[in-house]
Image (cartoon, rainbow, N blue to C red; front, side, top):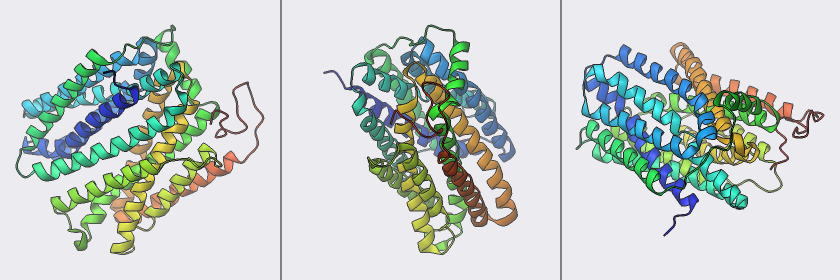
Length: 405
């Protein structure tokens, strides 16, 4: 029986996010057990971030030129090989190539499945179902992360972490074979060279409605980053939450993932509200919830859980809005540009938060970062209210005013 494209995307997303969560929750512990010192771990992780950005930026242009299906298969194979290599060769000398395979494969894979499915649906005359498909992809993402959290929490005390990573690697390789054998072929939508695709994608990302999407992506990603950086030290400081016990942190992460899944499911834009304003409102509410953190046990719990719900809402609204304004022939390229920008924004937020944490503690660092992001969001909101004359046939009245939504 032919599997609908939406179901393919959701199934593949479930496998990839589950595997990614398993690896992300255990790889530092595995390296420490393998004898890698903390300073080297920092160098290794920073190196993977640099490599992933270098691969991510042009990967979308490759997909738009040669087809997303091949990019998905190659990405999954490299990603899975990295996890298998990491699990089967527990030695400091082999961790670096394993991490490079992992980061390169994940960067190639990122954005390609969604681009392929969205373009396929639009080509088949089913553009009206794209928002539902993207919303479902966000829900499955967070549910898969929750299953990953539960797996680590339940199996972590009985199964060595390296063996859990091994299972994740096998799942990714199996997913690559599934895509190769059953997914429809996808030809490149652009006959121009990769360099021209990349330049056109950069130009498209910073013009028209895509510029608004870029700014929203930067602020949203930075908000997620300070949430991620802050929650463990803040939760560990409350004995009522179980302190720094692994079981307590695992349970917290499970609750966070479920809250984000709920938010993704709720991420429907009111028809009377413009798409860009809906995303802005979700980001502002997310930051508002973060300001509750540190005001006691109850307020901290409400703050973090409410913020996670808004992470799901905002991610869904942003995904639907961005894919509504990205041209089909540059979908993978622009998606990769946005993903690269998101990664750089998160890295910058991590850096700022780290310095503030060292100087003022995690709670005050979180509040300072949150107020800073609220100020940037306010400027962005004001910018959208300034009337602008169209500069070409596709321009909107403001960078966030999309005629496509």
